[in-house]
Each structure stands twice: as structure tokens, then as C-alpha cells.
Length: 457
Ligand code: UDP
Image (cartoon, rainbow, N blue to C red; front, side):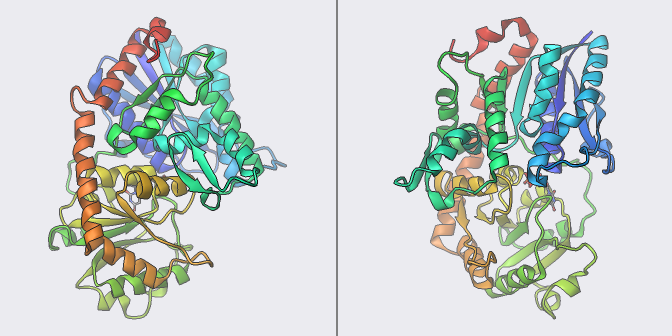
């Protein structure tokens, strides 16, 4: 029977891609494992074409059907994402049991959004790990969420201090609904109690947060969950030439001259906001590659953007509708800046290529990532929203120009380039991420020695 590691990502392309890359990485270090990736498949969604991941036959995929939530569910859509995999637990149980009949199930690795799956792994007594696909600093905030809730009510304290996270004023703390606070508390408890936390980060990017996680978050009396920081892990695009015309357009642009604007798999803007971006880009006089996603997929670019914009900017800019091959774009020599929604995959993809950023967080933990990028890693400039929630043309144009054409922009570029080099070192033989991944694989190979391999023993 083959030693098997089961990976259970959450829905969302960023989460699935990152977990698939983790699977590939495990296999490069230990080809004798087999990897099974379970894809949660809600009843109303189309199944994912897993051939696009470019995996070899050591990685197999299974869909876990997720039935629709029972009628009368009172949770908001924001909270439902954390709980809905529980409805698929029956199917998960069945699949794990059937895998264990033909292979030696060494570990299940969960996305934190799927934390309710521990109800199954605990019942089946399978060692359970979490792969946190965002950074260590936002994980510090998540694990500290109970204390944050309490300190928000303390009137005299204007700042929030979370070990491993930059000190921020109360106004900067993202507000979350009460039901979500309860869920975060449950997640915090579940993660603290697991067999290990795998994090897609590395020392030069988030050293302070990594240290805090190793010391501050777990009850003294318990065996702390070991931490494995194995990043930067990013999607590796296939070798074949991408058809997308934006890549050939980039070929014709000067080195490091183009700023990319791309906002993850879910970032969409109103026509008002798109108009401000267009005016700002024109004013900045910088070259740009802009992935435009609007509230309605029906609208054409001509409908969405100011009259004549595409024509006036065709020498300097390229606009792509909905989706572009971001990893390939960021690795292109012509790209010299990135306006990002601060999704962690996007952040690491930029860091790995030494591309400095302008931050425009939109949802989830991206506001926390922005704070880390600007204050801690110091590899980005922050965009300010107006009071009506819109980023003005002037603000966007000024920040893009500052990033691409100022002393401060140059300093940020130099810093992110150093971080890129440190990322390569961390992943290379003997580097911290290399060592942590080896430690993890060793732990899985000798499952009986779980407690012996905890870093505090
Ligand atoms: N992505 C892409 N093309 C696009 C938008 C996004 O290839 O037009 C990829 C991007 O490279 C990243 C992922 O989708 O790997 C988005 O993950 P991230 O964590 O940045 O954001 P999320 O979509 O999870 O909010």
C-alpha cells in the first residue's frame, strides 16, 4: 500500500491552485508518496477541469459533492463559506474510508476554510494538518481573534497590538459581523489543536510573524502545533506558449516599464470606479496592462471605459477582459509594477519576480495583507480610498507614477528584489523553507513519531 497524503482545498481558484502546488512540491521532495486532492463541488457549480493543473499520475483528484445548504439557513454568504463544507462531511467520510482501503493514509491537509472537516478526520483518527494559503501575519490575527474582539471594546486603547502583526489603529481593524467572530474563534481553537500548520511564507517576508506563531499562540500546557513555513509556493505555468496576446504585446515594451493592474479571481468594479481608473492611468502617463472585470460580464470594454480611452492609450496600454495569465505576465521582463488586490497568491507571485506593488485590498484578509506589505515587508505603496469607497483617478495616477518613477518607488523596487533573492534561498537546499518541508515529510513518513518532531521538544 502506498503512503498517501490527502489534500482538501477550499473552493476558490486561489485556494485550489495553491493546494495543488503544495501537492506537486511534496512529490518533488518525496516521489514515493501519492497525493489525492479532494475538490469540494457545490451542487450548483460546474466541475473543475483538473487537467489544466498539469499534474502527473501521482496526483489524483476526487470531487466531494457539497449539497445545497438546508432551506432556512440564517448564516450570511460571508459566513456560509466557512460552514458549508460541513454539509459535505458525509461524502468526505465515505471517500477517506475508501482511500484507506487501498493506501496508507498518512495525513489529511485542510484549507482553514474547511475546518469543519476535522469532525471527520478526528472520527477516523487521521493526523490532520492545515495549509494556510495566506501569510503568517494574517494567521496571527486569525489565531488572536478572540483577544481582538475583547480589546475592541476597551475604550482607552486606540491601538491594536497583535504579536507578529504591525501595530495598527482601531480604525484600521477590519470590521466583521458577530457570527464571523464566533467562527474565527472556532477556527482558532481547531487550528491550535491540529497536528501541524503549514504556511505559504518565508523568513525574509514575515520573520516576525513566524516567530510569534512559534511562541505566542498555543496554550503552554498543550503540545504546540508544529509550524512549517514552506513558501514561497506559487503556481508554475505550463511550458507551452500561451496564446494570450498580452504576452506578445509585452514583448514589444521596454524593460520594467509596464504596470499590471489585476484584482484576483473575484475583484469586480462598478463603471464609476473603472472610469476613475482609466482617467488615472491616462494621467499617470505610464505603460499599463489592465485586467478589467466589471459587475456585469455582458458589458463590452467600449461600454465600460471612457469614450476614446482604448484608442488614445493604444500605444502605451493594453486592456484585457476578465482574465489574463498573471504568473506569466509578472515574470515578463517588461513588467515593473503591480496594482494588486493583495490576495496572497498574487503577492507571492509578485515577490518571486521582484515586482513592487501598489495595494488595493478588496475583500477577505486582503486588508491585513496590505498592512503587512506596506508597513512590515515595505514592498508596496498604499492607495487611499475616498470616503465614498471610490479610489479617485488622481490617487490612482499619483501612486502608479510614484511607484514607477520616483526615489521612493526605486527603494521599494530594490527591497522587493532582495526579498525575491531571499525567497529563492529559502526554497533552495538548506534554506529555511526547504528544511521545514523536509521536517514535514519526515513527520509523515514516521507518523508514529509525531510528538518527537515538534520544534519545542
Ligand atoms: N489570476 C490569474 N489571472 C487573473 C486573475 C487572477 O491568473 O486575471 C490568478 C493569480 O495569478 C493568482 C490567483 O488567480 O494565482 C488569485 O489568487 P489570489 O490569492 O491572489 O486572490 P483570490 O482570487 O484568492 O482573491
